Length: 280
Ligand SMILES: [Zn+2]
Ligand SMILES: [Zn+2]
Image 1 (cartoon, protein in one colour):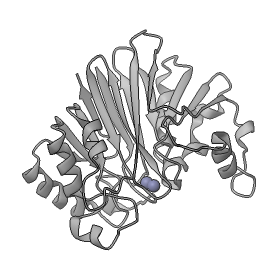
Image 2 (cartoon, rainbow, N blue to C red):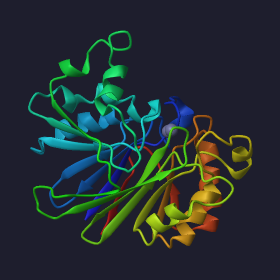
Image 3 (tube, rainbow, N blue to C red):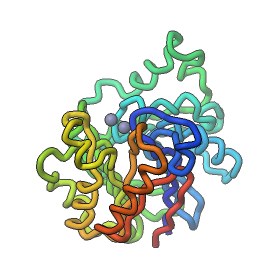
Image 4 (cartoon, helix red, strand yellow):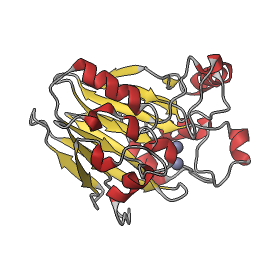
């Protein structure tokens, strides 16, 4: 059984205030846990990863290596990394994972080093303490075998976003989860993404804008609620969670949108910070 937990649901920049309490203010960070073993993996290191790291240390599960996969490296997906407490633990191994063909990553370590240069941040990456492995896997499919010996298959597909970004399909023991955030389909839905989402138990999809808003946000790299629903419908997914909420959308707005979306695709919700979903 897998459990998905949303530690960051906001797009672009973190927000705070009473009007954001329900859906949350931290930027993208998703935890995937294998419930049988308690072992976790992480997707993206937006500001939500700070609490994830604190919770992980408090749970004291004995897990000494963590994989963090990245959809891409825009600020709202890496900015929490310097505040990820397990990275300051000398006994930890942090694996930074960036699978996908055509990534053209000249230096994966450099991306993290730069945001922690002393002009931006007081502690350098080399001073944090943990051991870091940088794994720019130039393939679309990778199979990992965790300590429980049950393989996990990760498939990455590049999608349209300024600078490029990747959707991921994560499969373990017949359960499939897909995450597709920071995706701009354009005038028609990206068929590769529909294929990747085919039949998944849970699709987590970008929905930063309403269809009307998207008209004036072309080239910004995001999707509308309707597009997320169209992918879910066409790929016959079981459940849909929409995320990467626009910083200008408060709780009232998002609640209204969620109701409208549920009229079109009943098994859908908007992501809320702290929300967990069990699958399998
Ligand atoms: Zn983003
Ligand atoms: Zn982005």
